[in-house]
Length: 464
View: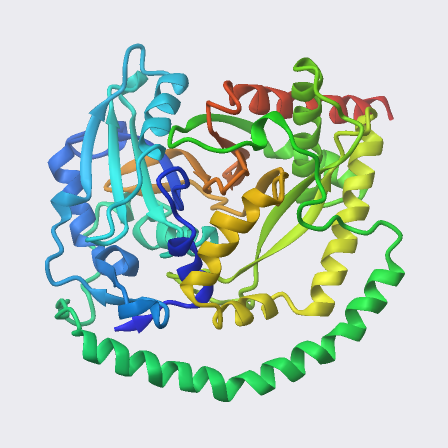
């Protein structure tokens, strides 16, 4: 039994019938090299053989009575892999758009809470005999960095190694009985006591960092925006349960050329391309572009060399999407300056500080903020979530089949109807866009717009 951190639990507390707090990890394999080709039953067997390499996959949550403290994870004694794996067939001709439509359908339904918080939808009928795997994993179980490490745990860099039997678990797995109310309450009180003991030290450390934060803000000419500082847009309204999904691959070498030429980061290039796409979309819809939008950028707080496979260790960088700048070069340079300022302020405050304070917030606080206070603000906390995760650089294989595409996308939040997530895999940046079709009808305006914005920057590089 293990207690969720406040950050992990927050994804449970803020979930609602229209806000699903799961993430999607999408892989497409080419089974041509797999011995015997693709077989659904064989896939289930291979997955079951490797469950000990996927720690979140057999753990379920148990709530503490009266919401006294955050829930706990237990090993689910009633775990049945057949309750987590299903198969669908993509409509003809089985291209990328048809796969995207299947992914949108998967994203539109929440995960049930009475079992481990994941499912895999196997999408058959894709062109050229390829097979898609859409993994829906609750954000409470893992963030993007942990998910990337889970993927690396079950796949190998060569086809030969991938068909070898999986390494045996160090000890046999066994489930846990569901703890009773008395045990849950006693353990919760003990953990709350430990938090109370640690509170003075956390308060002293936090107050000690404030002068550094003030100095960092004074030194930065381009100050990052605060939450709720962005304008209301057509895609920032109340969500429904429906989701739309779009994907596209951008050449990683192109982003690297732009990065090197302008002396910015890959993340700056991604943010500038998202801003360019949104500017085009807003102008086409007759919406104003006289103010920057606000973006939340999740960043990992893991120490170098950490091999975490579960949970969340992230902070959120607040920055601007400069839709108010028409010139793509000026937009990119402004993005780079803002990102550098935001990072300097966050480093002064301590990237892990906010996560430590979240441990002290009970469930009722999260529900009050997201379901009562946020709607009262009359504007979104941020306009979009933009995430960038470094994925595998080399080809990966499982059971002899090559992974030919890899994508990921995070959830939407209340009044935040756009999530853009990019994962690098091999030589490309895999762009995935999730939105609510009732506020943004066509997610491909974002993927196509990002491609056009990147082409503008490349054209400038070529002219120079």
